[in-house]
Image 1 (cartoon, each protein chain N blue to C red):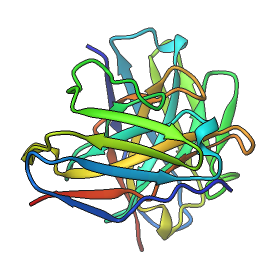
Image 2 (cartoon, rainbow over the protein chains, first blue to last red):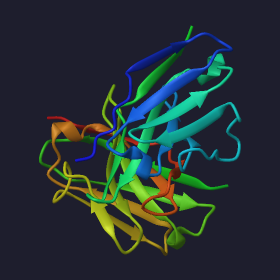
Image 3 (cartoon, rainbow over the protein chains, first blue to last red):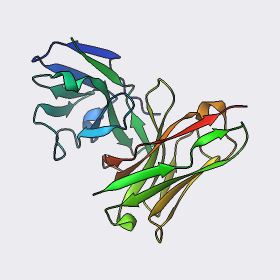
Image 4 (cartoon, rainbow over the protein chains, first blue to last red):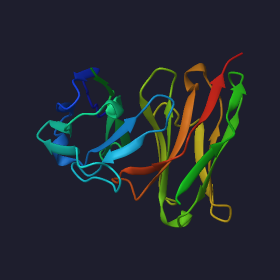
Length: 108
Length: 117
């Protein structure tokens, strides 16, 4: 089955840039979606189709995808960005949707 | 506005059954695909089931035990869970999507299922 690997945690100071990676075999050939989940809340879509943002999501959130790694970048990090972040793809070879292992972003 | 509201969670004994509901509003229910996604306590997100109304896909962990269905007259999605196990304990979310390769753009607030004797 297809596996997506994320770093367990990323720490960043306010105003700096956080980069969260999502590794998968030839993930660059798939559409990657990213979700933010704060404690006790449902996930929220923050980036879809590798690099597009839903309405209402700040421009500080951006995404890229190439080769075996997709990346979610959060510029000018704010305290409110502290959350768990998950990548997700559709694996057409297995007809399964797959979530990454999740990354906890801590704002120092 | 677009909204999904799950219900039906609770405490159930191992081996028993439970049916979850997801009531949809604010969009044309029959035109969109829906997922069930779960999250065990302290763990990450796990995709469970996807249905676009004609095709249905199941995670290996629930295949043969869980079934998805929808009632378009009630704008409601269902998750029938049979032969429940302790590892099925989780918050269950329904999520709306445009199709198999599309993102899950709207999520419900979740309903909690606890499998315990």
